[in-house]
Image (tube, rainbow over all chains, first blue to last red):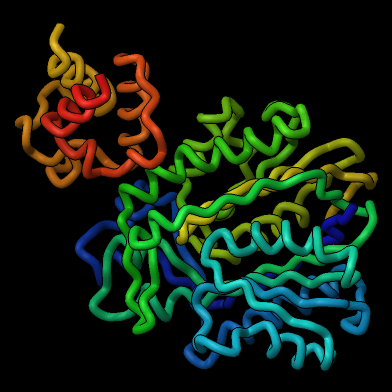
Length: 316
Length: 77
């Protein structure tokens, strides 16, 4: 048994509004909002790296939980936008936290990386103890490259989220998870070694619209639960229209799917943890109340993870 | 009602538009349907023709025009 003890997040101060973007693209701010549900996204400073964003989210998470970095037994860092092919950002985060020797593992999976990280951390915590999972993305370096691709530039923002996964059942207990991958769609969403992002939007939406609800149903069915039994769904914040479609597909009110995409944008693998950190700053879960995490992205990789609160007023 | 007529009826229902593009014209490049209407169209096709469309077939290539949808359904029949 492992649990999510709490969350943290960091987003850069600078916001890029739809009005600013629309002036550079052949479109209107209203069109951007209509097709994505995004009003603004955060953009990192040129000097900020994925490692910097990850460290700030990690420190926020540890600070909120009053945990010393010396208590961490392993670090997992998910990112699809790290500057280097190797080493990835994980070891740098470990160094910055002052815990040399602690194993640090990179998960180079965009979008669904944090979900895979949660599921893996849940399994690994029995062996490594407290695991710090961080998901950090500097997508602006890709999405704001000239010449701008309208369909890419409007979606992505920068930020990082973090979650502390601990052995035992204190917090948000991981009940079960399902993970899937299908390399047949590798060319429908990819980032080249030269930094070019390719996205077949129609295929991505078609597949995600079906696979995310199916994964959620799969994990619920394993535990004989229904979508109506879930207090909150915390999904990769890819596009508001997709979130609405998944809610509709599951037959639950859209409000049950927490969304912060309007002011954070799509921060790829970081988005689900940033949303969770924000949700638990504003809301709480009580014993028996459940949260489902779900994501879909490049690979394709997708899945869902079912959790249940063991605490009164769990606020992450 | 022919398969083509059924497909046209589905496209009209999903798009909310009374006109439809020519048989070979792209439903998406013409702006007739957006990406989020596509899953609705696929669900309606499954219900109308009593078929289950596997995830591996969910590519725009198979559903990009009335003619392609008609070919797909005929191949599945």
